[in-house]
Image 1 (tube, rainbow, N blue to C red):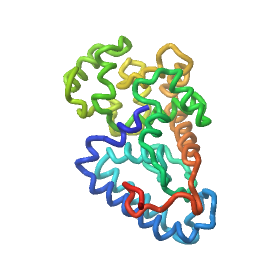
Image 2: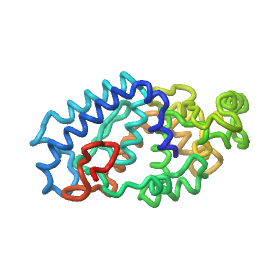
Image 3: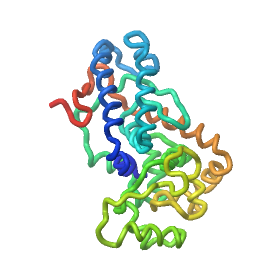
Image 4: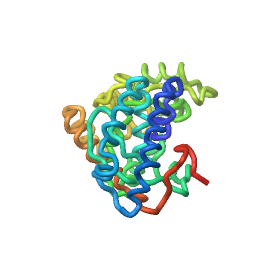
Length: 272
């Protein structure tokens, strides 16, 4: 998986204002609403129903405006959901339990260790998700988030110069954007077909050996997940449904609620 790459979407930097407006709005709701729910030590889909019944429609509108201004924001929001998010974005929809607070002990190294990297093989992908209680099917569905977003050169350089299970013309085109040395921060779409649409083209690309990351192509490499990928190619509705259920499950992982954690004054850093 390349969650870090998604949030670093190059296009996000050109229209960051829209996403910042959404972040500030989210922060305001946290500051105004969560203190009144401090006694609730659990997540709930009705977390804001009494204190601010218009919270979700308002946030939804802000998210839609942000994504309309910059499609790259959608990939960043998916990444945020993987880390600690409760917002629905375009494509398939799902219900997410609310009330999660921010960690006071965030760790970039821990995140990079827990979330499989772009060079991961199939066994590592399956095991990493299994450690969090996710099946191989759920792992494949969540990998479909790579239908939007971008990856930096450093994440796929080894694949385009050394992997054999990659379309030759696709690899050649990527080499022009990602030289063997330098250009580490050059970005290309994770989905070469429909890079700003949430669809099942990501899986179709794997069938043509056009998975950008080594970990992407591992999902269709003669292993145990081949049948799942092929199912998602032929049945996009099944992919959307499985993806939504897996994302909802992620939202319930190890939440900090009540008096645990903190409500950050600045979304980018801890309060102290």
